[in-house]
Image (tube, rainbow, N blue to C red; front, side, top):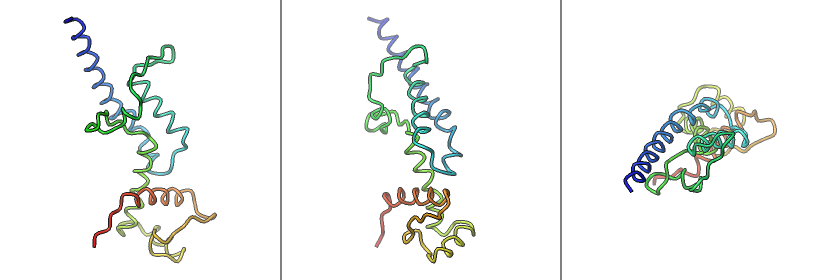
Amino acid sequence: MQDGESISRMEEKYLKYGTTLAQSVISTIPVYTMQCGKLPANVCQKFDKITRDFIWGSTPDHRKIHLVNWEEVCLIKKLGGLRIRQMKDANKALLAKPAWKILKKDSTGWCASYLLSRSSNSLFSLCLIQADSALWKDILYGFHTLQLGLKWRS
């Protein structure tokens, strides 16, 4: 019985090590790119797969059994998860940052000049048009994510 307990403790230790490593290394590799634009869904899925395989200990030659649903692993620790961020969600959050800066009027001159060129002084009144650059489409995507979490004070 003691051997089984020590093996269980070793597995728990390596799982903690693996999740820490996954959070601090694997999930931070694409951060700069995710701040600059929306990643394609297949790229996010590939990064999530790399993270899953690393945590579960799977290799290209040997796939291990996943005993817990990945969505449960991604939950916050209070809800029983390991707080692994999915790339799609991290990308949304990082794209909301420039939108937040624009809302706070903390952005550079090019944002203000773009808003003026669209005859608008706020992101709230903007909608996508065909001529928008990929960067602005991504900023508006981040803004829509930001709107979901905004609460207005009276």
